Length: 636
Figure (cartoon, rainbow, N blue to C red):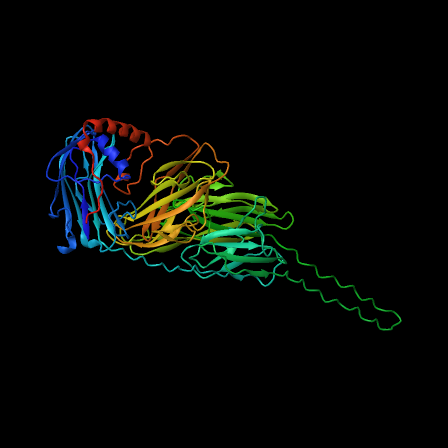
């Protein structure tokens, strides 16, 4: 394992900027034992000391592994603050070439002051243990971030381990397919309810119902696969505009299948509920009269009347998590303490003719663990007074068929620190002259074992159609351009976080490119925009990188597209990234921040600024040619 280091004295901003261009965004310098000032604003002086005693052209294995230790003594003369930052990269290929791939900030440690206000002095220290790796190459960088005018990288070291790292071929994990089990009544003369059961799974699923073998005019329902069952038609939505709501009619054959979170369809099953036959009344035979002089007439029997169908009440209840951004109602939802959930109640009167239903009422008394959110109740889209959870809502006297939609919200309260709990909420519809009915929806609460978990997600973007190579917070694009999104998910806590799920719901104007999602360089399933993908566990300070590609839809002009990602894990509430912005045909993007993935990319400079500084460099170079910066050179 060899190390290469560069030392350059009296570096000015113009020299430094052209140095960045010369070595493809990597100006790597170190200063040892002397004070150095440069003309950024604020002005900063500093000294750099390396304590392990290595010299140039030293092969470290001959002396055993060691910890490379830099001590930076820094003074900020102002005006304004400066920030000290560091970056580390590990590449599987062993050589001396600078790299901005495979960011691994856990390799390179930084302690002491990281922000120096005007007039402050202090010490910032950096550590790299060469025993952390034994193959490939490691690059460690540190530098100043000047918020007003520029930046400077003052530490840059390349460690070449001399042998490539082997990369194992990942074994793809097949996604299980699910087969629905349908439970229906033996017969019915009215629309009926079907129960759909399936093996319980730990992710979202999508259930389809159709009245044809295969067509686009179907109904579907997306829900959590944890409960292992659901009912129809409640919660099933038409897939095409203008379709009626789903109703299961006797005498009609239906087809159903389940799509898993990898968009793989399971087997299709079908069923049909026959109409119940009406028993034929047994006729009463007219007896043959006895031959008598005066026959006795036999009275004609009164026919048995056919029973008249009676009216009845029906109700369905669903729930969704507002805090996590869930767009689908289901009978069961996952939530953390403090999340806001929305319940939807659909009362219905099934009346034959113009049947009278008196004093129709709906009530929902919240169980322990749920707190009603004042002012959140609506009836068919209009806000109502807060009586639903204390005495009920009065819907009046109704004649004939009737249905409505009631929504309200509640906050999930903690139910204990050492367990998870399912809260079941029941809604009831009653009337004076009909039997009351009820339905339930459940909230599965993940209570925290501790409050020390800290999950972080950052999101960046680049336009590959315009040959962008730098990850940014915003970019420009036009219809047909290919846009890559990059998600950095890191565990900032001191313990392992399990079952990390990353979800990126695409905004309007973008289309996902199938089979384009990768996790740490390996292709994974296409679930990132549809419920998310599970990336497993993250150890303390571990980071995973997810990449996927999209295309800007045709006809998109003069608009700004904002895309935000989110992540959640066991005992960790959902966290959200800042938005990655795409300006569609709106001119130059100003102020786009470059992701800190390398020494060069720690520098936020624009193309125009770089050209101006390059011009200044040539002017200076004619006067001071001895100030040319050195670049990375492979050591023998």
